[in-house]
Image (cartoon, rainbow, N blue to C red; front, side):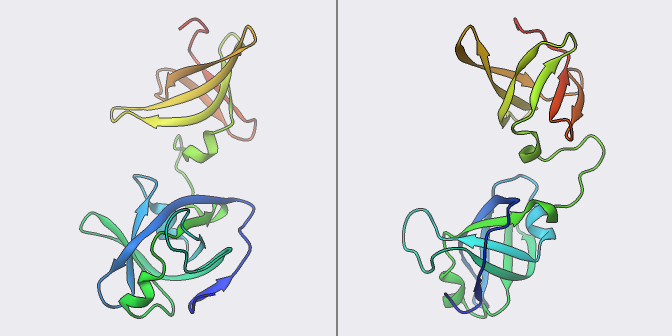
Length: 187
């Protein structure tokens, strides 16, 4: 294991939130490519769990815990520093590493705000009680977010999309694993 990294087990609620793209500066900082437009999970967690890059050189194996000293926005990009990474050469050893954060360490969402990861797998039902599918992903179209669902229809799996906006979304019940919508099955 590299100096500054500690062997660890991936938390059961770990979510992949980004990857380390490259070293930044000469004092051990590194650039991070977040997988979210709002990288609050990266900023709020002081423990990141790393896995080696899927492609390219691998400087470590298994799961490693990285103690974050600081993570922040700088000139439109996310940069971070970690304990025991004091120079550019050390930071370069992290290039490509996948970053995971325990879901339990995410900041609390505000009323009517949801983390996409929490919506995936929820059942979508309309006001008439008709099952419309299960959320498999979300898309950002710029103007709005869209729920993408798989739905079984006459023995075939079809894809259905519903804009995730208040005019169509009546209720999101995370504990009940259900989204109630004003949407018809034939839309």
